[in-house]
Length: 291
Image (cartoon, rainbow, N blue to C red; front, side, top):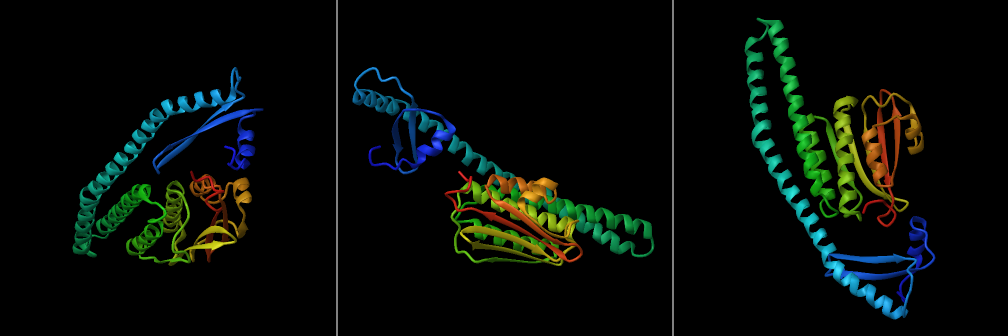
C-alpha cells in the first residue's frame, strides 16, 4: 500500500476506530476484488513475516469468499429467469383472460343498451374494475422487469414505460432525455426506474391529468429526473423541499424512500387544480449510495 492513496482511511476510521492497521488485497479476474483489513494487530515477530502470513491467509480464504459471491450471483440470475417466466405467464394467462372477459362484458353492455339501465350501469362498473385490474397486473409485470435494468438499458426502459403508459391510459405522455447514457450502478438504475413507474401510477390514479412529461437531465453535476403533469396537483400550493416533505410527511412516501436509498433529494411543486412537478436529484455515482 506504499503507493496507494490514504484518503479512504479517514472514512474507514469513522466506521471503525483504530490506531494501526494491516491490509492485503484480493483479486479474482476482472469481476471481483476485495481487501482484508486487520485492525490494531499484535505484531509478535518480524513485520514482513506477519504481512506474508496475512497474505497467505487471504489466499486461502479468498476462494471461499469468491464462491459465496458466485452463488449469490447465480441466485440473482435464477431469480431474474423466474421473474421473466412469471411475467410471461401473467401476460399469456391472467391478463389475456381478464381482457377477454372485459371485452365480453362490453358486448353485453352494448347489447342491453337502454332496455335495462340498472344492469347496464352494473356491467359498466364491473368492466371498469376489470380494466383497472389489467392495468395493475401490467404495472406488476413492469416492476418485475425493472430488476434487470442497468446503465445501458435505463433510458430505453424509461422510454418504453412512458410509451406503454400513454397507450394503456390514453394520457398524452412524453419522455425527453438530455443524456445519451447514465453513470449509475445497476441498483441505482433499478431504483430510478421504479421511481418513474411509481410516479406514473400516481398520475394515473390520482391526478386526472391529460398530459405528462418525464425528463432526464444533468443539472449542476447531479442527475435530475422530473415528472410533470397538468392534473389536480397535491393538497398544498407551492414548492416543498426534501426536508419539508420529510417533516410534513407530504408527497408519496414510497418515492421518498426510494430517493433516500439513492442519497438523493426530492422536491415537489404543486399548483392545485393545475398540476404538479416532481423533481428528483441524484448525486454523481461516486457520492450516491448506489453500491
